[in-house]
Length: 220
Image (cartoon, rainbow, N blue to C red; front, side, top):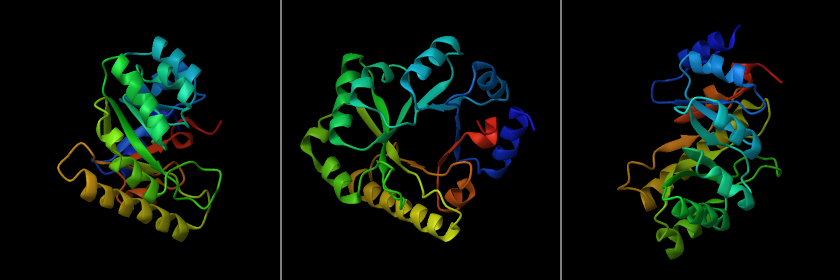
């Protein structure tokens, strides 16, 4: 199937309220433009240099999401280019994003990343650390950060029951933070979970945003 056909096939499986981020890392401009021509506008990148090149060369109505682990020394390059940063997992990173956003007179939307998987290698906050972060007066004073929601990645496994448990855990985390810190803020609305292999399970658990690469563009 073509990229366009793959996109249509995936969209048919997604409820209207679920946003589809096409993970375009390592993909060529031609491949991205094929998805763009099929109506796709949200794309996710995880390498700063690659993102900068694509931002320069591709249509300006593309909304770029930074989906990788963002290092603080790369924040300056990323902030002016993206509509959402997916992986905020520390106060230091959040502070660096706010500082750069302030310099650029921007408000930068972020998702708090949680470690829900069994694998140690994945990044992310615990619920305790996230509550500490959000209760911090310095965080509350950050005028150039917009908290949009939470994200997390399930264990890479064929054990669907484990994946369901992890997505349910993230769903509960989202609900708790919404209730405690964002009950009056409709903008805190994204529960980002689900990728090519597990997005149906994520959607069943309440995901509002899925990140899909290989099922759209084919494996590398």
